[in-house]
Each structure stands twice: as structure tokens, then as C-alpha cells.
Image (cartoon, rainbow, N blue to C red):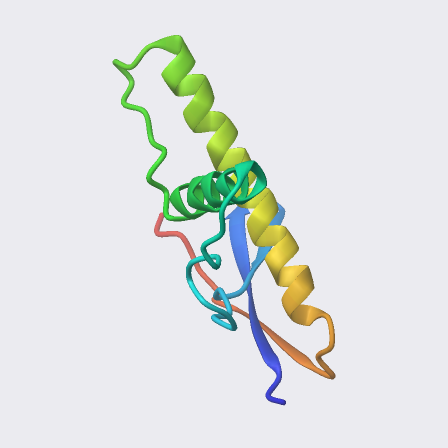
Length: 106
């Protein structure tokens, strides 16, 4: 198995975050089923996909509830990305962590 490529992304100051590309290991959609639980699982999968794709952005003119919902979905997307990174590292023998050195123009 090839090593996992992980990027160290500078966030500003002395803050960094690990990032890796999403690993496509299964079907994009959950298998169709019937019943209340299958419908709930489908709605949750759709919500996560929208959050990860950044579709939950509220314009500044949106109401308070829309902005709070967008902020919550961004938080969920970050947690899912962190968990996917850890899940991708599970079972790997090696990982390559790389970064881009950036000098801000003065």
C-alpha cells in the first residue's frame, strides 16, 4: 500500500492544520433501503456531503438562523475531515507529511 500524502497547511501565526485528500473507497451514495432509519441515514449522508462541498454558506444579509446553521455545518465539515484523516491513517504503514513554505510579501 502506498504511503498516505498529508499536507501541513499554515493557518496564520503559529497555527497549522493537517489535510489529506478524500479517499474514494466506496460508493458515493449509501445503498437504498426502506424504513425510517434508512431515510434518516440518507438525509444525514446528504447533509454531510453538502457540508464538505461548502454548499452551506450564508450571505451576510441572511438571517441569524441561516448564519448560525452555516457556521454549524462548517464546524461539522471540519470534524468530518479530521476524522477522515485519522481513518485514512489507520492501517497505513507510512505517511508523508509535506508543507509549502510561504514567505509573505512585505
